[in-house]
Image: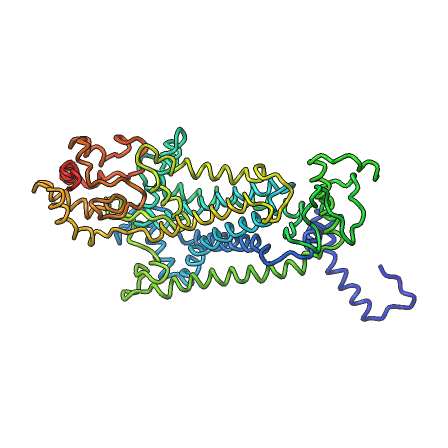
Length: 284
Length: 281
């Protein structure tokens, strides 16, 4: 409550009331959850001054994943994971639902096309992002764990590709999956068990289709979302790496004798007491 | 504090100190994520979404055939293929392009003794190495110029994956309509007796040549063995049929799909043809 020396004008009173109305739900949420502080910490945290365009590849991959999630949810509304034969046309139901989405549903071709090609874009961006992290040596202390999480996301992304490929239930997808599962089966010890599990039997059947559908839209995406959350948490906690050729800001190469170099703006050696941990959220 | 600094710090202390310095540096001289970095991220994300929409549009608008259906292949392939039919074996087992490198890897290994190296062995080793990378490369230095081993390894990995993907993408696709033209050549080269001729036609049209080569025809897509001289192993008609019905019962771990759907009579004809194939001259 601002105290005025003079009596506030009508206009001042109105804008003051308006501000209270706008701020009330934000303050209410912050008081009960701390989420607003967390968001502010996320948005206004410092990144090295010379981050470059290559460092947008991670968020680009995230965008591609979100495209997959949204288009996938829409496709799931119209797709039927059934290998049963449709009595009217004599064709498999799953295949018919794909044809229906592609040829008859309004904008269905766009949603399915974005899902089909977004998968490739997602995989390419993950590989490029990984190449950038490798190039920058950004997997080194203390970011080892985040590298591992990233590799797991890549592997799960490729598992999405493998399970999603079967769903159109056409000749290409069917036979590629037959051979793909057989290849998994050549692994020692676990291989035959894994092949049996993926097929849910001796032969690929309608049960394989529903199993792949469940893996493709529930199990693996759930895992990927959990891993992406952990990945982002670690990025925010540990901070963004600056390029190894950086001169301007943080992350300079250690000098020959192994000591971190001193440079203008930071003339004191780092005190021992500073812990490598990041600030907790909201303390800005 | 300077007095404490006299002793040489341990590597662990050193990396902690360096990271603390990084943190202090970023706090002092860095810039705010919003709006600076976020602006770049937003532009890049818009590019990504645009590219995805463009690909979807190209896929659709170039693939409408005369009958107005998605079966007609456009610039990016057909929108869908004929429905899955476990009874038809004339297929080319082709995964999505980002698995080409794994599929093509199989050609490097001989069947069936070492094929699990190609299917599981090499990919697993590569994956484990990839996961363990931060623990294999523990030095603090990050510039590529001072990481020659990492640089060479990266170039080799990118090159080999690129070559394998390219080879997988351009691998021969053996179309039944083309392979059938080679049947007379097989008959003369391999001196096939008349009773093996129906089997030869079946071999050319049932999808066998999608993975197997025979006297120069066929694809060897997955590195499956050449069958020009399979008859010299004298496996016998019964074993051949058993193998065609359930490949892994004869060759444990074989990734070959079952051809039981062809029916006993045609499997018998195929077996006669295979047993008669003695490798030409």
